[in-house]
Image (cartoon, rainbow, N blue to C red; front, top):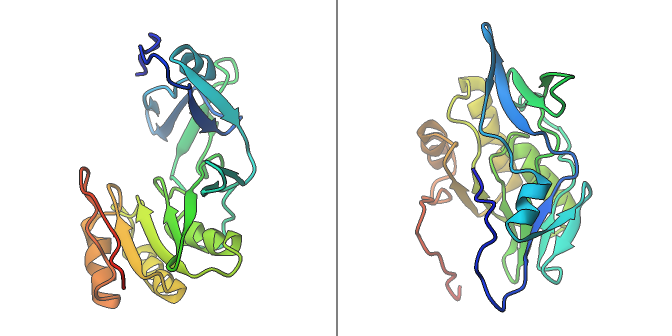
Length: 213
């Protein structure tokens, strides 16, 4: 839960929070006995009360003096990345829970690392890490894909989906894969087998740098 008390940060500019304009109050998943809700998403007003400046955008756009690009809606290009089974969202209590398997307001962030190529930060890849990577390559105007970093959402993937993901990521020829929290150890093992040397451990608190080579 967000602390709506205004933070005491004197002499500093407000934090800008970049958000999709159509955000639900709650997300969850449907079970045979009914909906299971996750924690509520902080509302626009709650974030503003905490001192944030809200920037709403549904389209791809750049931020921080064009240093980073935030994607628009991620196109679904693969047949096996189908979103969250039984995903639901609640926008209006009168309307009730609505299906939301695709989570179409999900976005990724990327930048151009000079001399290397595109670095993509995936979020949780509910759209599929291959769909994310392909869309990043399209938005990158021909720049090579250097690194894909973040959650790949494969910890519960069936074997066919896991293998298809590894095979398609290999075709995209990223130099570095840094699978995070929801990626699962099975993906990491298979990706290292198929693409030896490309999988880099990703843990909270680590600091990474670039060599001159």
